[in-house]
View 1 (spheres, one colour):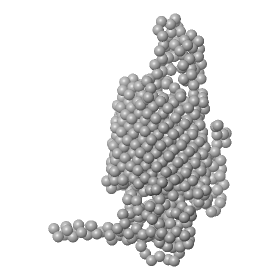
View 2: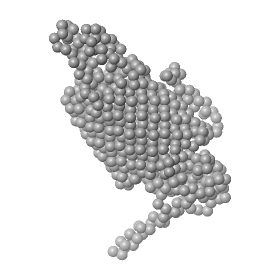
View 3: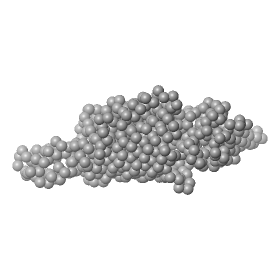
View 4: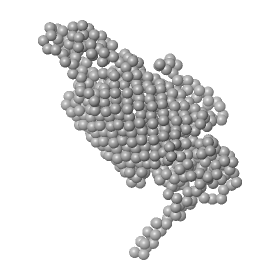
Length: 418
Length: 142
């Protein structure tokens, strides 16, 4: 079931917001966050992107401002202890920069009793540990959520509902959450070239977060069902080929996207003694689509606070769990069929293998809380990008990336809350 | 040498010069006393109700007020920056609205006197009849 997209939930919430301003007894809260950041990537061949929704980024020491710079504004209206409305708008460099896309959240929260929350509207897709606040730089020790894992997180929000229930287990606290909704996103397919793939999908997820003293443990499962047919022209050509070369039928099936699913399993662990801290996550993707690669993503970070200074190290890892696609085109086919088939096989391989992510990264950094509600950060990441997995990066020239790359990315950020 | 020793002694005791902190609620609130963990849960936005089930509204001092940093440090061991970062995760995830902030003790006490859901912290002082103490954070409290 797809949530009606002709009259989206978030616009209904906005209407309620507009009418609510005329009522006197609502408690209004305004808040915001901002980051001014610059990233410097020394590599001339690869464009550094925070995640797959960006079509532009730092390369060749150009000192790019729009990887991390953003402004978020939030309004919360409290009608009573049960009812609250939240709207958050985020301005940043987006590939698809429309006002509708700038509305990050717009929802109504109903809390019939303490510990039970039902929310309806445009909501944050709470897929990973930092998902809900990953754009708020001030909440993070690093300049940005680790790219090896958060680079794949295309889901920022969805239109639907979520339900959260809190349980007290002795000294520990368990929060269980489930959500369901619909979303769509345009993913750019090349460096600043305006081309994209548009996904429409339904998502369903559950998560459990256990907090106990200095520890926090989280598990989540998210199921994404793709509603769009993204490969029809390519499948049609392969279907033609299959009449003369039957093995192509596997490709015709594998390339299907509509009604197909992929799933995330996530485990996260956080420890914070106020002195030393540790944060780590692991995500495994199981996919029924050739277009979404089965893969594993992880990071671990260890840090220590010295007064207002926070120093940390960061390791990241991403790898597909399957070999690159290699279509076994037979040799000695009659021409021009043989050449055409070879060309088509190459184009299909390039498209699908281009989405693979195989890299590891090593980073160090510092955060300095120099004044209330403001922090300065500096971070240096060395990334080893395998030539068979440069999916988080774009080629600066638009040509296929050959050879392993070792970009160094230096990032500076100024985060603030207001 | 004596001066250095005196200085060190003065440094050791300087922390104790800071006042005790009182956690207060409206006099009509049925809650009599709160444990430290319950106060932590309320001020860290983990719960939004008193142990008896009544809705709670935490009141806060403005960021940068010395008593605020002192209160959170004693309550949670966290610096003010850590507390603000933590609260930002709740607020910008849309899970909680931030506690209302006031300029000083006088304003806080005024609001607690009026608001039956309120819970707040103030430096030790003689308090009006409209509020009552539910917990004390003394110097020795960790």
